[in-house]
Length: 184
Image (cartoon, rainbow, N blue to C red; front, side):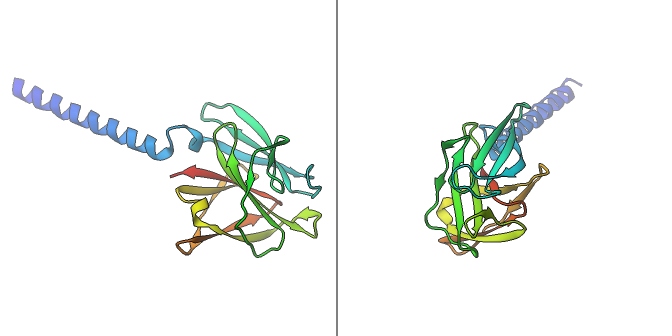
């Protein structure tokens, strides 16, 4: 009888160790800093303060895994965040639209983002189109890309193309777009 209890105890300890290791691995895959667990929502699009284009600036609300929220006013045309120069324009990009701007950087909450805007006639961000953006694959290597939607959902963007160049299709439904970059 005693041997049977010892075997049960050993089996339970082994199972517990496996569950702990599995939890650690899934936590590692999701990002240990918690930034991958943020949720986000584009609240609105408005006139860009820096360049003067309609719908090129967005208010984006990020919610932490602990329920804390913070709003960011992000200009996809110049890379300003809350009036400060935060995002860097990517130089080696092209698109199916002529005046396309792509910026990338990390917000003060630790979330890495990319913005895309296609400016029509220098006066407003294009709406209801899909921008097919080509950029060096090294710019997005090691990241999964998620388009942040106005309804609080996210749409995964799957890069395609060559070994050196990636192409991403970005839905510009409401104007400028913001993409959350989650480290793999």
